[in-house]
Image (cartoon, rainbow, N blue to C red; front, side, top):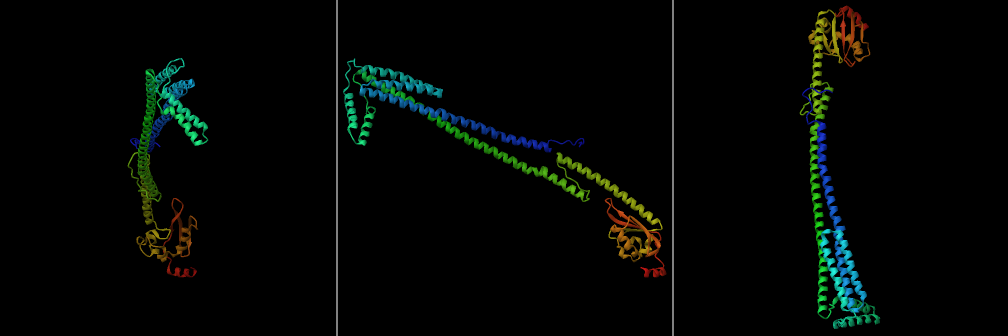
Length: 443
């Protein structure tokens, strides 16, 4: 359909509104998806670091402490038993600590300095273990400390008690006491060199355990920070998603509210106007408020209604002209002219039939056929014509009016329905009284 100049749809047309609504929905939904992906990715990264790095660092720090303390127990057992296997176990423990530190460096480069400090401590500890082995070498002249002799005697007594007793509870208690004997006491070595070595061993232990505890604290602190950050991201994500969802709901409510006003109501106005036109009321008019497709349709319907009204007015004027000419023609001819509707009521009569009507023709209009006794002879043929039982036009001499010829023609509308009848009487004079008396028995 071609648009008229100056009636191009503006930005408020329906397809533009639909596109804007889709773009608005996408603009509101896209941030939800992006925020969800962003927050989910950050939370997963934080949780992955907690599980794969921080928790592993805490475990590594614990392994460093446990392994190094195991090496120290082996060192003290050497003082108790004078067995070099314990020295080898102490050196192996130091090597395991180095391996654990190497794994820790790969987990987190930020903690590499603390792991390097632990490895330096392990190097010093190996030197101290070698010094301890040299001090108690059988070729040296260093006397075995009396405190160690007493400790060894107590340790041997506990082991003998565990071997000889039949009570399982006492045996387990003796074994446990023997195992903890070296850990609970400070096994000092006599002499200046021995005291210096003990101080260095205690200092090395303090530094290693301190660095291991620092690594555990660092990992635990970062775990807490990551957990709080993940919780904060979760709260932010929920808040932002809830905000965007509220905006989406508001937009949907706005669309639902504006839809009846912008779409449903114009359609309803157009349907009402078409219904009135269908019932024959061509004065219908659709109110136009905008410039979208529905408003264009409403303008076109208004133009159609205007043209239909103009055509109906021309038709009415033409019919009135024909009716006026027909009246003039009927008034000038000598034949009687009668027009009846479906009732049948008299619609038109000329002066020639006033003798049959018994009153002036102008006063007879609108009255029923039964009110005119002089027209009783038309009742049966007129009923047949109006019911459609008769032909389109019938002419003949009726018994009630033997001196005249009567023609009855059916009047139909444009649909073919019978709307009335036209009666033409050639000699519209009533019969003479004697003729009427002669014809009454026949009637």
